[in-house]
Each structure stands twice: as C-alpha cells, then as structure tokens.
Amino acid sequence: MGCGILKPRIVSGHLGTLRAQPKVSLLLTMIFLFTFFFYCLSGSCCDSQMSFGSLRTAQPLVPGGSAPAEPWISGVGKQLISEDAHENTLPPGDAQNTLHPGAALLDSLRPGTAHAISSAKDGAPINSLISSNRTSDQKWSRSPSAISVHSSFGSKKFPQAIIVGVKKGGTRALLEFLRIHPDVRALGAEPHFFDRCYDKGLEWYRNLMPRTLEGQITMEKTPSYFVTPEAPRRIYNMSKDTKLIVVVRNPVTRAISDYTQTLSKTPSLPTFQALAFKNSSLGTIDTTWSAIRIGIYAKHLENWLQYFPLSKFLFVSGERLVSDPAGEMGRVQDFLGLKRVITDKHFYFNKTKGFPCLKKPEGSSKPRCLGKSKGRPHPDIDKTLLLRLQDFYRPYNMKFYQMTGQNFGWD
Image 1 (cartoon, rainbow, N blue to C red):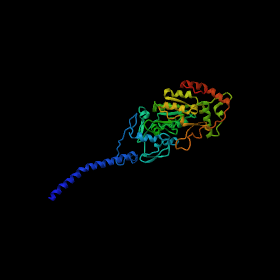
Image 2: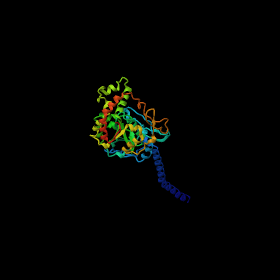
Image 3: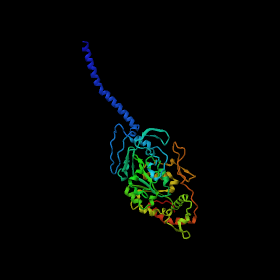
Image 4: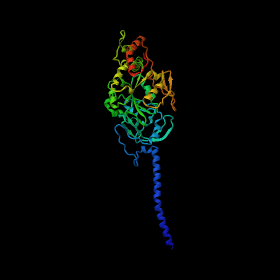
C-alpha cells in the first residue's frame, strides 16, 4: 500500500516538473531578451558588431534616397549631436575628419570600436558607447544630393547648400556662425572639389562630408567657386537643387584685404598700387590681377545664372555680417529652411579685432573668435587711388544691385 501511495506521488511530481519547464524557459527567455535590449540601448551591441547574432538586416540604398533610419536613434542620437565640440580645421585631404558644433562627436567614432562619449558642452560624461552613425535626411530625399553613404549612425550626403564665395568677403565667419546650429553639419576645411579636385570624382567628394541625421543639412564652403568658370556647371550636374550662398563685400576693401593676406605670406610682394594699376598716372586698372577681378561680381554672377535661377542664391552682406550678425544670420537660416536658433544672444563685438565673436559656450574657458589671420590691419592706400578704384567698380556694382535686387550701399 505504501508503494501504491508513493507511486502516484512520484508520477505527479514528474508531471509537475514537465508542466513547469515551459514557464521556466519563458522566464529565462524574457530575462535574456531584457538583458539583450538593455545591452543594445547602452550602445554596446553596436560596438561588438552583434557577435551573437544580428537582429538587423541590410538596407539597400535606393537611388534618389537614403537608407531608412533606426527608429531608436532619434532620441539618443539627436541628443548627442546637439552638443557643441571644438573646431578642428584640417587640410582638404583630411577634411572628412573635421569636427564641428552640432554633431561633431559622431565623426570621431569608428565602426567596431567602442568610444566613451563626453559632452563637449559641459564636460560631463555621457553614459553611452557608440561606434558609428545611421539615419538619413528625409527632408532632401527627392534630390540627387540625398543619395548617401550609409552607416549605423547617420549618412554622408552631397551638400544641400554651398558657400561659393567670395574670398575675403566673410565666408569663414558665416560658416563658424552657422556651425552653432544643431541642424547644420559642415566641413571645416575647404575641399576645393569643383575647382581643383574635380577629377577625383563625386564619390571622393561625398566621402569628405560629415555624417548627418534626420533633419540636418550638409554644407561646405569654398569661396573660389564663385570665380571658377566651370564650377556652376559642375555643381548643377551634381544637383540642380543645391542652394548657393555668396558673401559679398565692398570690392575695394575686399581687394585690399586680399592683398593684405597675400602680403602677410609674401613680405616681398610689390605695393598694392603697383599691382592694381597698369599705369597709376592714367588710372588704368589691371583686371588680370585676381584681387581686382574677384570684385567684378556682376560678371561672375552672369555665368552662374546660366545654370541656376536667382531663387537658388542668397547674397549675404559682409558689412552687415559684422554690424548686425544676428540679423544677417536670420536671413541665412530662413533661406536654408532652418529654425532661427542663432540670435543676438550668441554674439558680442570684439573691439580689438573689429568684428563679432561668439560668446563663451557653457563649459568653455573663453569665447570663440576667428583666428589671428582675420582682422589684420590694412596698409595705408593713397585716397586718390581708392577713389579711382571706386569709380572703376561703380558700374559693375550698379549692375550687380540690379541683378540681385539688393542695394549693398557701396556707392
């Protein structure tokens, strides 16, 4: 009888164990999945390249568009890219590594390698490990420039906007001011693709670009494009939707500034008068000298208007960029379709340099001003020669005002 009683108990216990196994397996599975997702959200699974089995499938690029974004990137990734980073201007050959405020942290990361991220804004560590960027800018997806090189934390695209000119007009200041905006990613170095490096091909050019997230735009600046005859056609062939920004300045003061820069590098340079005038007594201007030729804005613009309508251009006043940087930056942000983030609270006027600087960011020990190569004192030029230059440029200026619909007040 004892065995008879014991037997049912044994059977009953065995069946109970069998019934409990699925519950235990389910519990273990849930614990594993919870651990896995927590691991991924911390960014570590990206760094290990999903060594125990990837949950992602390859997303092919579609011509005219870019690869779909990971839905979880928008929160963490966008928070990271909103932090400021210090400028790191490199030669054109290393331009792809240039960092800038807005999303500078991301370009320093390499696929397959974990990097601890620190906030460039306040120096506090961010408890995340990320390796590369993945998303796309749907805003520009219909344009050829939206074809992107995909990565897991953003994509490299052709620039949707280019600062094409002019040299010594204020292009560096404009670029640095724009880089405050969290939705702007721009190269620090000038790539000179459409004037000097075009034979390297568009793929080479695109690989120079920083990665962008959804809602961001890619930019670059090379002032010599404006006076390069082939540049309009080449940019048009890349994308006819490219937005073009031209920073212009009184051509007389621009020419003197151009000369001053060259003189700082070549002390043996002839005088400004000797270079600007074929015959100073007759006042004949030497238009073959680049410092003079660049300032004939109307002539260069005629070439660009053969390919792009006027609506694709924004002409920024170099003088107003100094006297009212916030107002001029408002126009630029509107033209680019950006929210007006850059305002007068970002600027203060540096009396020593004679132009505005960016106020000290949080966590930084000093404000950000352009380098010592900007704001050099100009050599004294005879006033009679300056008047002759003004007379020379006046008809070209008037035509430029008419073409652009803007009076820049140079005459």
